[in-house]
Each structure stands twice: as structure tokens, then as C-alpha cells.
Amino acid sequence: MIPLQSVALLFVAAGGLAVVLARDIVRQAILFSIYGFALVVLFLVFQAPDVALSALVVSGIAYPLVLVAAIARVREQQRRERK
Amino acid sequence: MTRTMRLALFGVSVAGFAALLVWGVADLPPFGHYPGPYGDVIVKLSVPQRHMANAVTAVVFDYRGFDTMGEELLLFAAAASVALLLRERREHEVEDIVEPVRSDAISAVGVLAAIVTLVVGLDVVAHGFITPGGGFQGGVILAASVIFLFLCVDYRRYAKVGASTHTEPIEAFGAGGYVALGIAALATGLGFLQNFAELGVPGRLSSGGSAILVNWCSALAVSGGFLVIFGEYLQENMAERHGRRKLG
Image (cartoon, rainbow over all chains, first blue to last red; front, side):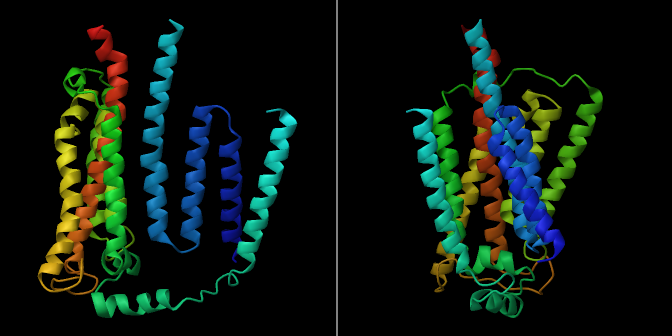
């Protein structure tokens, strides 16, 4: 295993832990995007560019958009309930 | 349940899971030593047999095209379920909401970004059999180019392009076309989804035979499906913020 691969693995492990430990949902979403980027780097240094591209579009586009839409919906509901 | 009990339960499950993980990992072949013959065979055969430079896409859309069909229909089912659960016939209620981005700079860059993203998406799909990429990755990028309109221009423009009357036929055409290509192969006397067209020169855009069509069908199904899912969420938000206030 070359050093770059070990570093990428460590980043993914740390990122996954950070996502799980974050309590605030917006902070969690931001941490997830960093974790997703670490995953992309991991797949890239393990010579799997196809998987890296898939991880990039899922963790960079698909997942955050659905998540943000869901967060916005919950926020709006909470704002209504407070009124 | 008390805190101590929860911690005890957590400890037991973590220990069990760790033991299973160690047991599973211990029997893996050493790092970098791939034992199976399948990968090596595919790498050797994908160019001479299928004229595809990218072995991964060759597996996804040709050798194991049937498995990918399952994934395609899975996304179709997911989009259909989201629409079924969230839709309350409100597209016409929210389609004329004006929520513009109040910065000309962002709008201009957003339109530019949408065009660039569209081209990149088409490029990733088209070169699926030559370089990394293909229908799935390109499909999501194509969907992102439409969403740029919402993020950077305004909701009404987005609603015009990304209306469910557009995205649903795209998704259905993609998923249906995928299955139809499989049946077309059957009709010519080959196996389901087997490649039936001229394979072309390896490394050219035209290489890949009928799997090129499978690839494009998959791109349509993915981009349409993703836009249906996102559109439902967005309409729900917009109705919550504007539509229902107007009605109630």
C-alpha cells in the first residue's frame, strides 16, 4: 500500500466518524460533503476512476440536494409551528 | 431504557460486529493480490470481443447489462414512490411562483454553469465506453444542469424546464428503452440485452455496438428519475412557503 492510499483511508475513516458524531443537521451535511470528497480521493488513488466519478456525482450533487430540500422543509414546518 | 442498559447493548453489538468484521477481513487475500479470474478475463477481452476501451462500462452495460437493468428499474421505482407519496396535484399551484435570485452576476454565471454542466454531462455519457463515466454518472450531471436554473436563476424558469410533464417521459423513455433493447436482442435470436449492432472501431465514439443505446437509455432514466425526485421535494417546499399560504 503506497502512503497516499493510507492517507486517503485515514481521511475516509475520520470523515465517517465526524459525520456520525455531528449533532447539528446542517453541520452534518457540510461534513458529509467533505467525507464524500475523501471517498472520491480514495477511489481515485486506488485506481477506480469510474467509481470515483460515481461517488463524485452522488455525494456532490444527488445526496446534498435531496438533503437540503428535506432540511428546508423541516425548517419551514418548525417556523410555522412556532408562530 | 436506562443509560447503562443502552451502553451495555451498544457494547455487546459493537463487540459482535467487530468480531464478524475481523473474521471476514482475516480471510481476504493479501492487499493487492486479486485472486479471481473474472476481472483479468474481462480486461483482456473487452477490447477484442466488444471493442470497448473502458472495461468497467463494458461490464455495466454489456456483459452484465441485465444487472444494471435491475438498478435502473430500482431508481424508476424510487422516483415513482416519491411521486406517489408526495404529490397532491399541486404543480399548477406553485408553477407561477417568482422567487428570483436578486444578483445579476449569480444569474449570469448560473446560466453559464448550466450550459457547461450540460455539455460535461453529455460528454461523460458519450465517452462511457472510452474513458471513465457512462450513463449513470453523466445522467446525474445532466440533471444537475437543470437544477442550476433553480439555484441561480429563478424557480419559474426551473419549473418550466424541469416540469414533471418533461421529466417523467424522459425517465419512462429511458427505463422502457433499456428493457426494449433487451427484447430487441431477443427478437434477433440472441440472448436478452446481448449486443446486436456493429461494434465499431475501439476508442472511437461509435464503438460499443447496441450497448451505446443502452448507455444513453440509462442516462435518460437516471437524469429523468433524479429530476422527478428532486422536483417533488422542491414543489413540496414551494407549496409550503407560498402556495398554501395563498390558498389558506
